[in-house]
Length: 359
Ligand code: AMP
Image 1: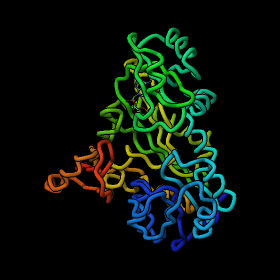
Image 2 (image 1 turned 135 degrees about the horizontal axis):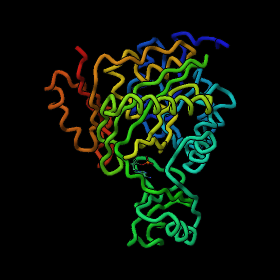
Image 3 (image 1 turned 60 degrees about the horizontal axis):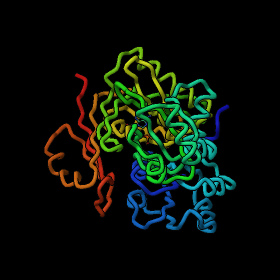
Image 4 (image 1 turned 180 degrees about the vertical axis):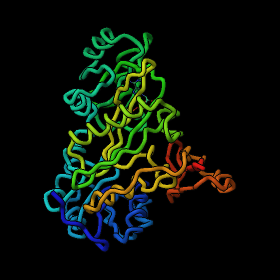
């Protein structure tokens, strides 16, 4: 069934004020929409480009109420937004993707159980809720293995690599969560991701798989498209679409996957929002991941995901941002800075997409 269209001029509420919100707001502005950001800090990257913001804690129900009253539809740009805040807003305003999708992806165990329930392959995993359970699991899984906290993990936070020398008590402390998930280590040939967009009318579009290279667990470089065969690419896209359909997604979903040495695809993580590995779509595709999200939120038709250039996207992390002048010296490099004033190690300050146009 076709949903009523939210016409240009309407206001999109964004929970979270980071760079993903900023780039969503920029795409929305181009289509004539306003955005209003809910952020815990003033002068957030997203607020800087849309002007309207509620600055408060996610536990501040009066502020969430004011925010909901000021917008026509709501989305989120960060998966660790407290689920209670999202549920509270959803009681008075349409939130897309649905709050339940966010809740599944906030919990690594629920996420993996969901994937298993829809027959999507992942690394072998087991819940571990204390050191004794970790000792048993380490014995059963062998080495290397990875211990991750079930909640609040991103960019490698709350993650510990386990080898025969690892002391379980130390690993448990380092992981820092209340409940952990032990995964067998995947000796992958490459890491890829697929971004899928799904409209309110059920129409969908998938971008081609891209290849992701991490440094210290943080995305460093995305190569688009991934250097994989067409059959693997087709399988990866089909997996992403299957997951989006089973989640009844409206919006944008990133599916991170490992391609094993044997060519098997294992899903590692889901993010129900625009994703760092999709930034290349701004400069190289007919429609960016951010514009697709805006289109989906407002019940507009999705745009084409075709790319007119291949691309290599490099994150500017911490002091890398000081190389902005160098990036501008390359006429095929597109520089994106997020307006963050404080440089911190590991902080994503911007990115550069180098285009390789199809001739
Ligand atoms: P995650 O926080 O789960 O996205 O993990 C961050 C990065 O750690 C991934 O992109 C991989 O490079 C690496 N990693 C996570 N889990 C595994 C695993 N089970 N086997 C091998 N590498 C992993």
